[in-house]
Picture 1: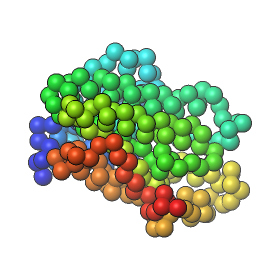
Picture 2: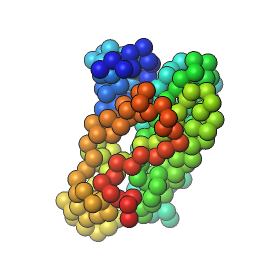
Picture 3: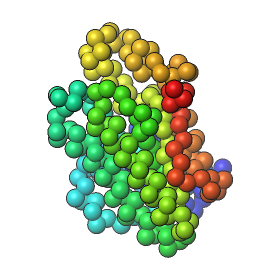
Length: 248
C-alpha cells in the first residue's frame, strides 16, 4: 500500500506497544515515519528497520518543547504512562508528570505542527486517547484527567484546523496488550484485594462485552485509516475500540 507515500509522520512513544504498531502501519502505507521516544536506542532501532528517523525526546520536559517546530503531515500523539493510586495517596509530582506527557506535550506538538500543516493545506492529528477519555475508573485520577483533557484538545484542534485541511481525532481503545497494561496488574491486584491472575478478567475486562485485550495492530489499523484520504471528512470524533465497554 502506498496511499501515504510522500507524507511525513511522527509517532510519539513509537518504539514499543501501540506506538510501534502505528509506526509500522504508517510506514507500510508509504509514510516516512519519525519514531519519537524516551528510549533513544529503541527508537533508532525501529527507525532503522522502517527506513525512518528517530527522535529521542523526554515529553515530560515540556519547557524544551515550547518553541519547537515540526514539519510533519501526520502527528500521532501516543506516548503515555500510568500510575495507579487512591487520590489521597497520589503523589502530586506523578500527577503532574502524567498530565505533562499526555496533555501538555500533545498540545505543544500540535502547536508546533499546525503552521506547516496549514501552509500545505493538509494535516492529520491523531490522538491515542483511551476509553478512560470517556469513562472513569478508580485509582487513575491523573490518567483519566489527562485523557479527558486530550479529548477536549482534539476537538478544539478539529474546529480550528478544519478550514485549513487539518483533521483531528481520538482513538479510544480499552485495555491493550502492551507493557503499560502488564505493569498495572500488580498494583490493581493490591488495590482491589484480588490475586494478580484475576486482574484481567475481574478488573480490566469486567465492563467489556468482548472478553479479550485489544491488540496493538487493531489500534494501528484505525490510526492508519484516519491518516488517509478516506477519512478526510472525519474530524472531531472519538473512535471507541473497547469491546463494548462504553456502550454501558
